[in-house]
Image (cartoon, rainbow, N blue to C red; front, top):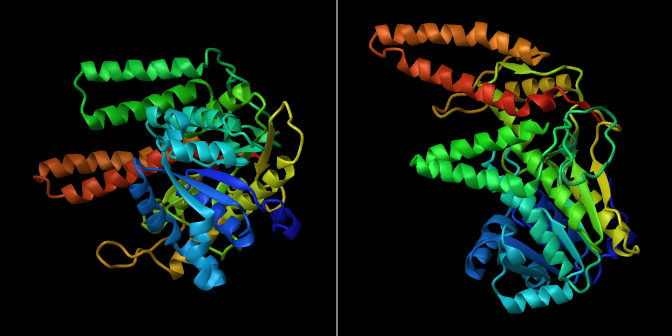
Length: 444
């Protein structure tokens, strides 16, 4: 999927603010715009920072010095620094705050006057993030971005990036259906964003009364997020808070033109600016790394399940196409939603990914902390959650209990082995609990 020249031409002399500008997808978006449309009027990049100095430090160290920008640097040559200084304004702020946390009133008024398009890419994508953090960024942050957009005099479009998995564990073709306030996936009534905030506050008070440690507070709030998500039918805190963010946007949008892009599992770049660029461990990468390190020897999943993988540059192309399509259209009462995925056109099966991993890491093994290559073998794949739990209990948990007794009898002689196995089992169970619904996903 490539963009035609007449598509990017529409963004000439356009001012755009990008929230979460240091994020994985945001970097690809910013690089693409600067490379294919250097005549964009201005890119305002919102970075979480208390002041301009620290925001510039983040911009220089996390964004512009990234290898992702090497093609742009080669293309621009000696004019690269000029391009950045003329086209990019770094904005310190925080989307969890009013006015996006921007303290410089002159800069704030400038943005309200100049900005045509708001692109909201700020998010926490951790599946088991602390509930207060996830709600603050993914839900209330979306509301704050919308309020900012309402203050922009030239506002043509708010593009909000969500996730296709807000739709839950459905089968077959999943329609691009908007969420209404209070909608749930399992029909349970009582979902209210303000009430969720109160529940978090009550949990804080309860923990303070118990003099809970910071570690205990973190664990409790992580558990609360998963609990609240599953109460209403979502598998984890991430998709739950993203769904509530969509609810707020839909109910409060007013006259702001709104487009929501819901990508599936975002992976490394396909072509632009070059193939294979990725940053950190994405959702699917966690399994690849776990396997490479020898931590995953069995896994949940149907070999015939389609893993809906979509390269980051294709998502960015879809975002740009959506912006160009909607910025010059009359204001629409309803928001527009686009699912961006590959399962219908270029399906990749679970078994194919497993085979790719095995072949790759057999040739290019992971080097462990001792400097030795980790040997990998075939992973045992179990098709149901019950069969996976039974397998883990018989193959690992029972022997682990025996080892624990043996270790106690021999004065902790087997302590290292016991703790290593315990860590691996805990890691596998956590991964399956968080990602299991997607390994058995039947939607497209």
